[in-house]
Image 1 (spheres, rainbow, N blue to C red):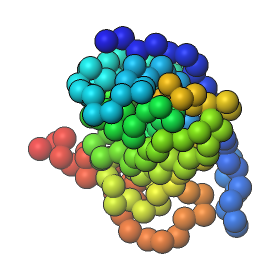
Image 2: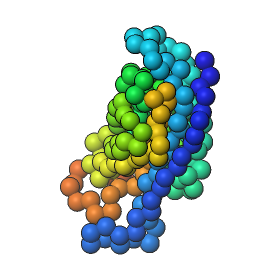
Image 3: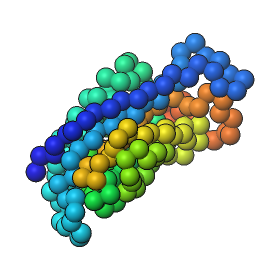
Image 4: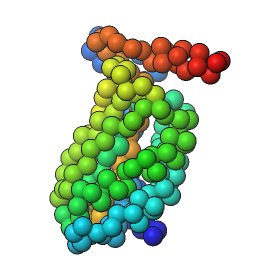
Length: 195
C-alpha cells in the first residue's frame, strides 16, 4: 500500500523570552503535519498491517521535512500524534505512528533513544490537538516536558488522517524543576561510547 498524501503543513515558533529568561538563540518548536487519505475509512476492525508497512516511507518523508523546518537547530525533544477523520478509527492513527514510522524520523534527526510521547484522537475538521513532547534520549529530563498545539484548517476530512511529528531545540526557557539535565544525558552517552 502507498499512502496518498493530500497536504503537508508546517508550523514553528521561535521563543526568545519566557518569564524572567531572555536568550539570544531562541527555543524553536516545530510541527510537521502530513494529511493522508485514510484507505481504511468507513471500515471497522480491518487489518492494520498494510498501514503499518506504508508508514515507513511516510516516516522518511516526515523526517526530511522536519529537518528542513528545524533549519539547523539541534533536535533535543520530540513528540508525535494524529487527528483521524470521522470515518476512521483511532487505531488507524496508531498504525501510522508505530516504531517503524518513527525510526526513519529518528535517523533523520540524528538519533533518539527515548520513547516518543504520543496522542491521537478521532476529530472533526478544525479540531485542536496538543502534542506532548519529551527529551529524545532520556524521558526523565523534566526540563524538556513540553508540547505544541496544532490545528489543521479544514481538516482532517472524514477520510483523512493528519499525522503530526513535533520537535524542540531545547528545554523550556524558564525551567526550574530540577532533575536530570540534557548535559548529563550527553555526558552519559559519551561515557558509554568510550566503553
